[in-house]
Length: 149
Ligand SMILES: [Fe+2]
Ligand SMILES: [Fe+2]
Image (cartoon, rainbow, N blue to C red; front, side, top):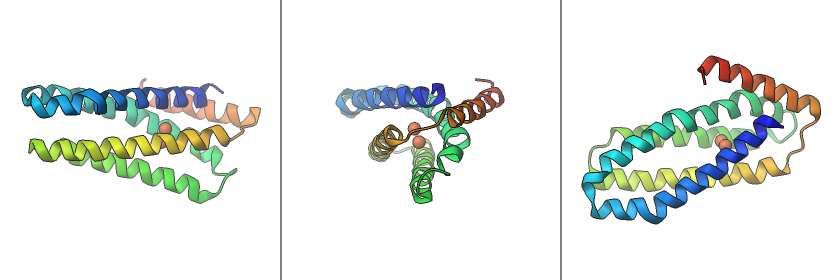
């Protein structure tokens, strides 16, 4: 179950990042504002590459297989989360006012945390057959090739 494991490891990575952002960086940034652009740049990089790719693998490789096994509303809800997170990220990128930016950042982190936890709970409850695992991995490979990752 290579793809599923990869995705779940990435969730753990997201939880770690969030913990770091929450415990130190945001608080710290409110005091030392000149560091903020550097932080925004790093975070944007993570969203545009790591997270966007993670979403793509879920949407194109995993969800189509899971859709046949679970309530369609579960997948719809996860897709809606992806849309909302991407939309919030775009808002975050465009905003210039620092206080507003930090405010959006907090809500973005919150959405991301809730979403990753939701998927963790869901993924751990799903059992894929060997055939389904192969299907997911093959589709993930296509995403990888297309993205040049
Ligand atoms: Fe997701
Ligand atoms: Fe995910």
